[in-house]
Length: 299
Image 1 (cartoon, rainbow, N blue to C red):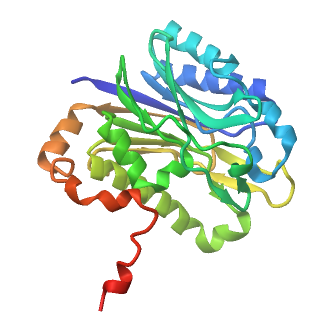
Image 2 (image 1 turned 135 degrees about the vertical axis):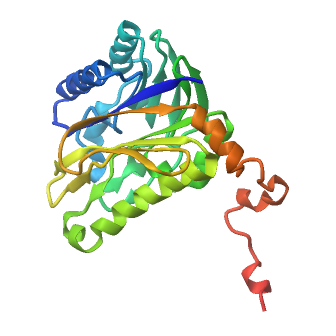
């Protein structure tokens, strides 16, 4: 099985969608020059993170799939023979919007999209105002350069999402991301928050014996005024044993390029056979919101 080089595009965003697209394409070019065969953008890279407020004007940022952003990356993929995972604010129909990611193969073909399944609604992360929960299910694609799956940001916290994507055949899980600190919380909770974010994703790599690649943005954004959000960067790639293979800086633009050996998936799953040893006959309650009455039965 081949090795493949990943390129994660971590950068700040301006209010100009066209400029952000041009920047992402330029960074993708840099990654390709350094050998990257699979490129992944950060979440909603064509704009500042607009979900800091509930403003109907922001729906104008959405576009169809296929559309201008996917067309630009399809041309890049076709020209250089690379696979691209591309975040898009998708306008599916009038009044119907998704936080989505397009998967483009090395011949420029649009293989499909994943629509974000878990939608947060926290202070300055008002995504439920904008995005309909995804209906694509958890998917994997056999691309020219490997079998990949895509999940998006808030999906990072859910082991069920990683598991089902791995069970669909993914050897690499990509997570386009936009996560940062509330500035007033950074001194008290910042280190713990980043640690939790990284730890849970490294655990997905271990539990599923696959690679995990998370790409985040950087910069302090205040599109709605106030204190805004300080995005913490630190994009990273973890191996099937949970080890961090590469990590980007917290405070600057960076094209994170690292090579992974897909043979490690088989080796890890053979020596740590967590997928083999699952008791699928005993997991029925995972489809319930809560196992009612269990706590009451404990003496």
